[in-house]
Length: 507
Image (cartoon, rainbow, N blue to C red; front, side):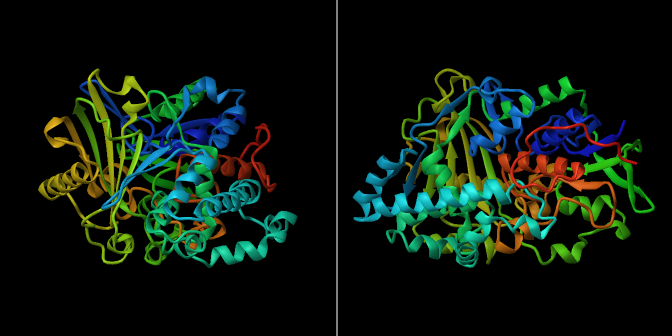
């Protein structure tokens, strides 16, 4: 039986393990930390259950499709609820705006703020949905291994439009639809979660607004970590081995072929196939000998990392009626905020902030009479921030949240406070430049230009996760697992895998 060793139990590694185990391979995962999930981890403190990373459940059809491959119903695996409203947006000097994910209602909201923008929003979302459906059918589920991947009628028919969008920034594209600053910010903010700036990301990513306004925002009860729990449960049913607190130290090769991994404790694990779900920069520059590196340090010097972040996990006494489940605060000087993060590499002041209150939808994540709050402040990559400097920054941003989100005595009511910063991303996840997300989604780092998921130097060595194709985010990592299966199966068809077949033995 073909032996597969996977480095890292992030969602990409877990999802890939399940597919290959179902395809008949003998699969083992070796994880550096003491629990699965990677960035999508979980922490329990004094009755509070915190998701440590991702908190938005988008692209539900990707999850549905993945579980269907195993004969599972995602709605039985996860207790999903559609959030209503989807999120609330706060501003420095204007009243908050509620986004409901009901197109007509949201169009009415836009219309009240800027006459004529209601119809423009519907047009923008419809165009974004068209791009999204095209991406699902032809771009997200492909390894771009052949020119035939692009020679599809749907793609050729829209080639002029797609080319134009590829070379137009989101900011310029959005300006063609709405001019009011707050509305532009609402349509541009998803670029933060793609690790990029709306002034640099291509307008192709306007598809993200189709997810916000048309598909809706969902939440699995007990948190997004239930996705990880479901994947590992499925893996155990399929015979996947899990080894925690087992960091990899080296990928071993013989005559240009992967032969396994050496662990930090000196143990060697034989393998016919090695798949790294670890940070790709770390994998290439630290786990491989120089002669085996497809992407050496010189390659990464030309790439752009997505932002790092200050994360705060807060247990708060009393209610926070001012907040919905998802909340965003946007500064007036939008461009300066992004220049701080991507150009001058300075801590934004003031900063745009994301605040999640899952206890708004789920009583199980906080003790009675308390609120569970997760805060994310995007920061520059490559900046060290630890100790007192990290604590002082957290205090400053909490004061900002108190003032701009009109929350009385927030800091005085905090009973649990855990901080996680750029240095922690580097230490815990071996993250390149301490990025919280991975390589940003510039045009030069998207789709066929993103770092491929297969080694150019070592046979039998593959990559999965946010560092590689198709990109950042939980659904992207699930798709990435299918792309690994497609490579091993020799499947060059566009679109999702229709069925998992037994794969040939690897020699």
